[in-house]
Amino acid sequence: MKILIVGSGLYGAVFAHEATKRGHQVTVIEKRNHIAGNIYTEEIDGIQVHKYGAHIFHTSNKKVWDYIQQFAEFNRYTNSPVANYKGHMYNLPFNMNTFSEMWGVRTPQEAMDKINEQRKEIAGKEPQNLEEQAISLIGRDIYEKLIKGYTEKQWGRKATDLPPFIIKRLPVRLTYDNNYFNDDYQGIPKGGYTQIVEKMLDNPNITVKLNTDFFDKKDEYLKSFDKIVYTGPIDQFFDYKLGHLEYRSLRFETEEKNVGNYQGNAVINYTEAEIPYTRIIEHKHFEFGKGDEDKTIITREYPAEWKPGDEPYYPVNDDKNNELYAEYKDLADKEDKVIFGGRLGQYKYYNMDQVIAASLEAFRKWK
Ligand code: FDA
Image 1 (cartoon, rainbow, N blue to C red):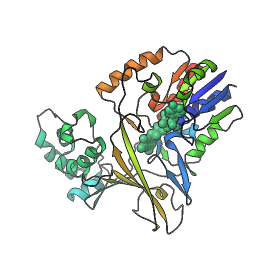
Image 2 (tube, protein in one colour; image 1 turned 90 degrees about the horizontal axis):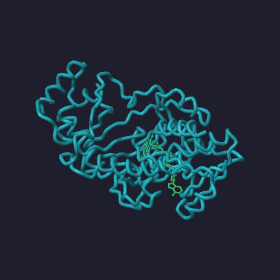
Image 3 (tube, rainbow, N blue to C red; image 1 turned 90 degrees about the vertical axis):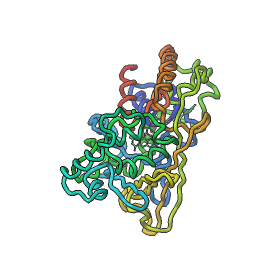
Image 4 (cartoon, rainbow, N blue to C red; image 1 turned 180 degrees about the horizontal axis):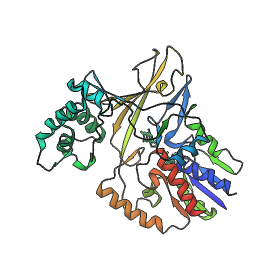
């Protein structure tokens, strides 16, 4: 069969790779000038630069972990971000190191006593906004220093104007463990992410066309292929006829610094409202000692309002947008020839492991 894959991100690449195992002829079109979608990394001065934000592979899905190992060897990177609040450094996620730095407590009991004492401020009251929700879960100190400014920057709105459901739970870890994820497996692919997609697409039965937008020849593609896997925005496929789905966007500012080690960690979050970026990524720390001794590359990540035409990064899965998505999904279900997949095609925040699992499952169902 002749299959067209729209988008060379992880979803499309996994599908393409699996399809060729069954002897299908695959064409992948990509509107950007490179493959790999948002997991794209580019080597600069011997350092793999994560061009669309920090990407840390983590999963508890053994099948997915085994699958991805075919395409790269992973290092032992463990995500342990640090928060900088007005020059004070706190370990994340919230754990005994954080509580000890914040309050000088030493034991889990002392930490729980302190949290419970602070949570009393909202006791017995139904939280009406994100601020009240966070205080009811973790107390004012952590909220003010580590949640408020960061969240307000991310959403571009005051915490008192944000709905409480955005923070459903705040995991509190009563051990001195700075590993951000609870997953069984995590790491960064040695040599970066782009090679993973390169290897997935490296097959004589796959043709890749960069700088090619599906919408330039939509009708022709729909006619000439037997099956289409579409990983672009679902609302755009239907010419936004029911309205625009909303996203949060990001702006990245990358800079080379003439120092060997700028911040001592791959990820530092800036949690105060006055600093406009949410985090600084120092790429070489994903890879342990790669790159020059006297040079490093950092990226500041700025949250940005999204308007139609901007790069869509995070779907806004509130009720209004989810309802609109459901209407588009009804239309999508009627398109027999087209599979809608990935974070844009399914309007869903997917981690990399979930995208792989979803693409493998979609292929299994279809084949
Ligand atoms: P993706 O967006 O990667 O690919 C879709 C492709 O389709 C793009 O290349 C796009 O250009 C192309 N396209 C769209 N419309 C088109 C058209 N009309 N014609 C042709 N091509 C078109 N996950 C994780 O597990 N750990 C992490 O640490 C992170 N970190 C992270 C940071 C940031 C800032 C973001 C935004 C996301 C993450 N992620 C993550 C999530 C991760 O990026 C995500 O799971 C995958 O990239 C999704 O792959 P897709 O193929 O679904 O979309």
